[in-house]
Length: 112
Length: 116
Image 1 (cartoon, rainbow over the protein chains, first blue to last red):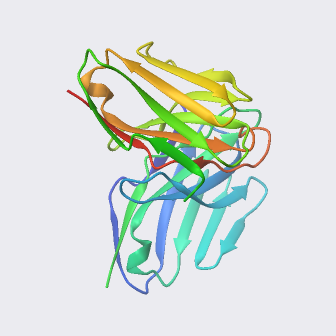
Image 2 (cartoon, rainbow over the protein chains, first blue to last red; image 1 turned 45 degrees about the horizontal axis):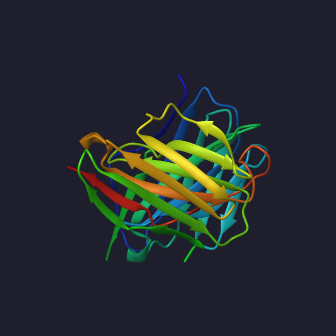
């Protein structure tokens, strides 16, 4: 069966450290993968997109990697801050699809 | 703000009520979506509209009825809901469908629905 898995356990890290979140998928051939941030009581907000033929993308303190052999994407936040505390969702799309498939999300808590 | 608005933000209804959720996007997008978000579950896609035509109905019970009168507005009509339908209902829009371009989705703030 097709699945997207994110660590359901909350990730707690200290301010200034690098947070690494994982997104694994099975039985998909994604055209691209996206990461979103969601704060409580709000809708998700797009952060980064990475295509199947790309290994890494960066945006300021954010970095996404994509390994189609391992069927995994990693999302890194360097020099994390308490304001980075939120739930982070990964989503993938296959070619000729009408939809994005979302993972359950991982809650990140950055403490001072 | 993301350019996608939803009303109401909170809704409490009984199982016999009829209510509607409204979504409006000010981004000039061609595709609009309804999602259901329940605790500890992935976002569940309910309906997809592209250029006002429904292109996806993800096995959603008939007590949920979508309507897309134009490319800027999307409604979700609710009737005879069940308590398990209580969730956050999110509307989103994108320039085109995900498979056509590497597009991102812009979400509204959601409607928190409680069915008593």
